[in-house]
Image (cartoon, rainbow, N blue to C red; front, side):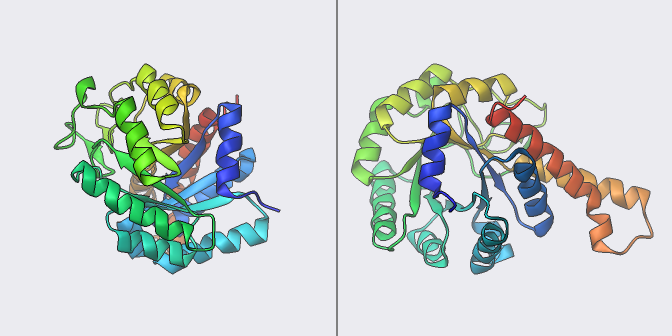
Length: 290
């Protein structure tokens, strides 16, 4: 029997490894990620943001994961990534998602806590063990290549999530997973390397929060920072922009090499290979596989 997501996260934490979370918006990205996880025999989280859910279909994404889980008897899970309202979290829970994040990072603290608690209460009443994640500390919203820090985002340590605030937020809301601001940013700097993470702060926030932590904005983070962050307490790591860049490059290469090709599955082959390579590399790193 496949273990539930809560158990998979606990086991990852015990092993000092992290579960890779990859955002998808089409079947090509899905197969690239799933086959990479399958190759390494590690659990994996598939994420779909509000925009990605609108494109794929809320229920359709859930049906895809359920069918793979049943056919392959595999620990693959589905997260409703970056939901900005209770209604969107509710829809994901009702559709059968394993987890959902309410992202109220841009809101006043009290409003963030209130709506997060509403999401937690609904999840608890759903009859399933649906994990609710919340975010404290703004790190941007877009998964794209950046020439400058996202508007409203600072890498000044004074603006990062503080341990006492994390502890109070988790206590007030009852969330299962906590996503802090620790030097991470959404998107990926065009230079190829994002700012370094505050590793001592990650350890301090983890100790204060007392729940598994999630690193958002993983794309572009230096490998050594990933390793240290996981050792310090990050149990889930998000990757999105790196997959998008690999997908786009694959399309460009295919069209250049095969200008007369019209079969989508042939044109997408390079994109799948590129995304598979990214997912494989990241999953090896997160799971400490040499």
